[in-house]
Amino acid sequence: MPDALPRAPEAAKRGRRAAPPGDRHIFFRHWLRRPLAIGAVLPSGNRVARAMARELSLERHGAVLELGGGTGALTRGLIAAGCPIDRLVVVEREAELADYLARRFAGLRVVCGDACDADALLAAAGIDKLATVVSSLPIKWFPRAAQRAVLDGCFARLGPGGRFVQLTNALASPIPAAELGLAGEEVARIWAHFLPVQIWRYRRHPAADGPC
Ligand SMILES: C[S@@+](CC[C@H](N)C(=O)[O-])C[C@H]1O[C@@H](n2cnc3c(N)ncnc32)[C@H](O)[C@@H]1O
Image 1 (tube, helix red, strand yellow):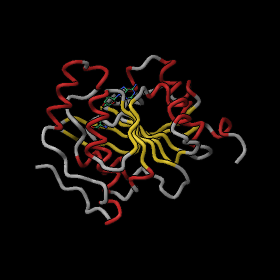
Image 2 (tube, protein in one colour):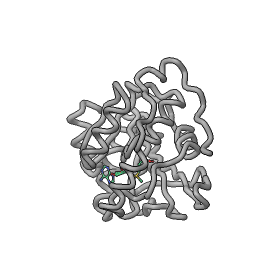
Image 3 (cartoon, protein in one colour):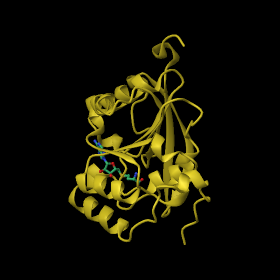
Image 4 (cartoon, helix red, strand yellow):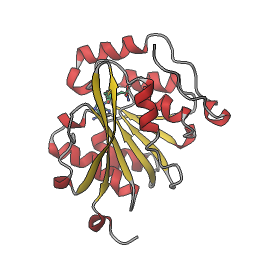
C-alpha cells in the first residue's frame, strides 16, 4: 500500500483536488505510444514525491518550476509539502497531460510546451526568477544540445546558488555535469518497485555563477 503524503497546510490544500481516477492508465497509455519521450511506465510514488519536495528552496525568491509534470504525482507532493500553488509553474509537452494537470490542480499554471524551449516559455510567461527547478524529464535521453538548452534556460533565472533537481533511474548522473559547467551530487536514493530512483542536485560552478 502506498504511504500517505504528509497533511498539507490549509493554504496548500486550496486548489488541490483528489487524484482523478485513471491517472496511471493515462500515463501508461502515453508510455506505450512514446516510451523514451515519457521515460517511465508509471507515475512517481508518494515517497519519491516527498523526497523531491525536500529539495525545494522556498526561502528563495521566484517561481518553482516543475519540468515534465505528467499526471501530477510530483506536483501533488510539492503542494502537499507546502509549495503555494500560485508559485508553481509546470511545463509538460504532451497536450493531453497538460490538460489533465490543469483540470486536476485548480489555479496551477501549466505551460504546454517543450522544456528545451525553457528560455522562451519562461519569458512568454513573464517569469524572470526561479527559486528551484524540479525535473523528472527523461533528460538522460536528450541530445547534448537539448540538455544544454533546458539547463541554460533554467540557470539563467535561478541565479547564484540556485539548484536544478533531477529525478532519474540512471544509477549515475543523467547528464555530463562538468561538461555542462555544473557540479552535481546524488542527494537521495529511494527504492520503488524494487528499483532505485535517484535524485540529483545540480548547481552552476561558482565561477560560472558570476558575482553575487
Ligand atoms: C518520467 S515522466 C514524469 C512524470 C511525473 N512528473 C511523475 O514523476 O510521475 C516525464 C514527463 O516529462 C514529459 N516530457 C518529456 N520530454 C519533455 C520535454 N522535452 N518537455 C516537456 N515535457 C517533457 C513527459 O511527457 C512526461 O510526462
